[in-house]
Image (cartoon, rainbow, N blue to C red; front, side, top):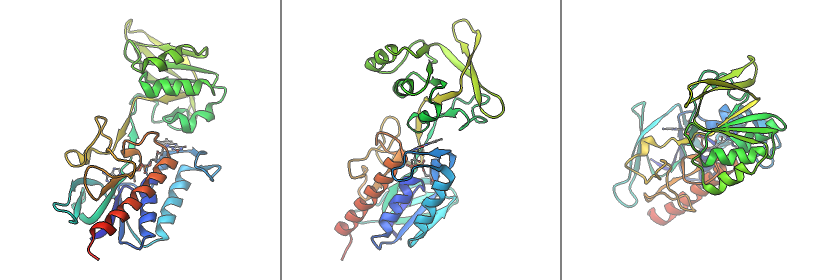
Length: 310
Ligand code: FAD
């Protein structure tokens, strides 16, 4: 069995594996797709000390760094079930879709998250060509341009306020007849001169010229009429879904399905830690996920030296 088994091979999992392996303990990483969300990212400009890189390059560097250590990497393995250790100091088991199962004294869960998509024509085609999901990441790429934000919850309204300081104009589009964000955010939003809000609107198509986004079409849900907007960017802010379905009924999850962790990355189960976008940590960013991965690994090591026989 492993001393530490990391489930998930994004920035959080890679960092956890490196920190664990550097303690000289038996470490494995199992991931559905090593690299995680960064594989789908174009430019990365906010990882401290790397001025600019792209997602696939960053993912490759993660993997190479992990491979410098004595870590078993098991790629293309999707975890489907966690069977927690029955007793103190016992082994946790993770079962995979392939039928394989692995056992470990401690676990680090870092299965990340995915952005909820609108699922309309053009969205997938123009992803990273105007369709974006992360305002902290991609906002500056749209400096001086016209953009839309889809979604009037807290994240959508925060994104619109944030973007209004960078881009020329923001149109916020909400499906419901009113915004769902906190009042204070709505007041701030409505005080901004370069923001329009459209409610009762269902985005129906992302339009482009074959290379990049040129606009969108939405349906007015009151009149059933379709309208078009010309713009260069569309930020989709309709939810971030944690990859935690496989954990239901084992570790404690928040109402949004995020693994509840404390400041050391500990979950509700002893010896089971978690890091990155799958957890309740605020701000889903690479630099945050890598830091939390390190923290979870050090916590797992701390747990091992306290619970394992000498
Ligand atoms: P992830 O990167 O999501 O990795 C999760 C890992 O777990 C993957 O290996 C996945 O295959 C695996 N996994 C999932 N489910 C299972 C399962 N059941 N069994 C086994 N393995 C599983 N952040 C920035 O800081 N800067 C940026 O510029 C930036 N741009 C972004 C652009 C895009 C398009 C996207 C989508 C995100 C961007 N982000 C950016 C956010 C950043 O990618 C995430 O915060 C970061 O990747 C989170 O790391 P993670 O390790 O927690 O999760």
